[in-house]
Each structure stands twice: as C-alpha cells, then as structure tokens.
Amino acid sequence: MLATLPVLTLAETRVLGTLLEKQRTVPDTYPLSVNALAAGCNQKTSRNPVLELSDADLLQAIDTLRELGLAYEMSGGRVARFAHKLEHALGIPTQASALLGVLMLRGPQTAGELRLNCERLHKFADISSVEAFLVELSERSLPLVVELPRLPGSRENRWMHLLSGQPTIDAAPARPSAAPAGSELDELRQRVTALENEVAELRDLLLEHLVAQPTAG
Image 1: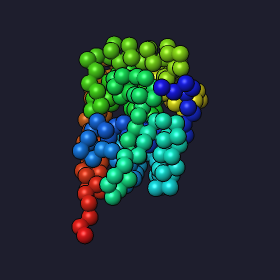
Image 2: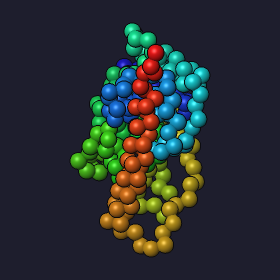
Image 3: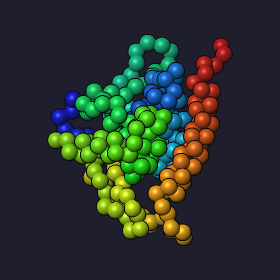
Image 4: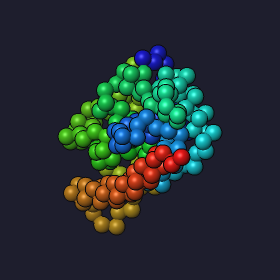
C-alpha cells in the first residue's frame, strides 16, 4: 500500500483508468497490449478530455505507473501486456476503484452521474451508496477524492479524484435551464446520455476486439 499519494499526469491517469475499465468491461482481452491500450485511452466517447496519446506516451506512462506500484507487465507471450494494481496499491475495495476509474476517465461528476457511468464497472444499488463510498474515500488519511464547490445553477456537487493533485476549481458554466428540471427529468436525461455512451462504447469495444485479434502469419 502506498505511503504517499502520487501526483499523476493526465496521460498516466488515462492509462490507469483505462486498464481498470477494460479489466471489467472486456476481460477476454485483459491485460492489454499497447495497441488495445491506445484504442481505449484515445476513445472519442466516455472520455473527458479526449486525448491522442502516442505509443511513446503510453509506454512512458506505463513505466511511471510500474515504478509507483500501480501497474505491471505480464510476463510471457509474444506481445507485452499490462495490468493495474490500483486496489492493492491504494488499499481500496472494487466499488471504490470503479468510482476512481470513472473519475479518471471522465473528469468531475455528481454522485448521480457516477452511478450511471459506473454501471459497467460496478452496479451501485442507489445514489446514497455511491455517496457513502465517496465520503469514505474523501476522509481517508490520504484522501483520494474531493467534493468540489457547487456550480452556479447546479443542484448537486461534483466530485474529483486527487491522484493528479489538488484540482483547479474551474468556472464551467452551469447547464442551461430553459425549462424547470425536476429530479425525474434529470434522471431521464442522465439515462439517455448513459445509453448513448453505451452504444458508442459498444462500437469502441468492437474496434478493440478487432485490434486485439492476432494477424495471420
């Protein structure tokens, strides 16, 4: 277990989050080759911000994560493959690592958004269970998440991981509210967004499987 919390770069958090995500969503191709890792890190969906990491960027990030004890290379086989050690290194359960992974991949989110976006990694029973894990992660001796100030016009606070240091508080504009947004309408919107993301992720998953297929000869 880490004695101090590392300060990871954006590339390193993207690699770590992608390893965690793909372990649970595409276990047949996990651990990941560099090609599969590149496809996952550079997805156009379910990523904020969208990145274009090169193989050199990925290998440098992996080297740092290995030095920190957050990732390792699988031995054997013709192609190098990589896996994460997030739960072991940080001493957290899989529910908490699912939240951290989604925060690393998608940026600050509310508890409601996290519940929807975590569905493929871990199904939380309700928002209160998400909030309970977030509070636990924020109250550790080495806090792993922080609750951000509420944005103007927002009804819920967002949460952010601390694996890249203390976040800069941005002044992102609140979502437009042309009509009153009740809790049911908010939930419907979130579900529509989640479904759209899932369809896009399925396309990315198909691409990853194609990339992971060994070439003839």
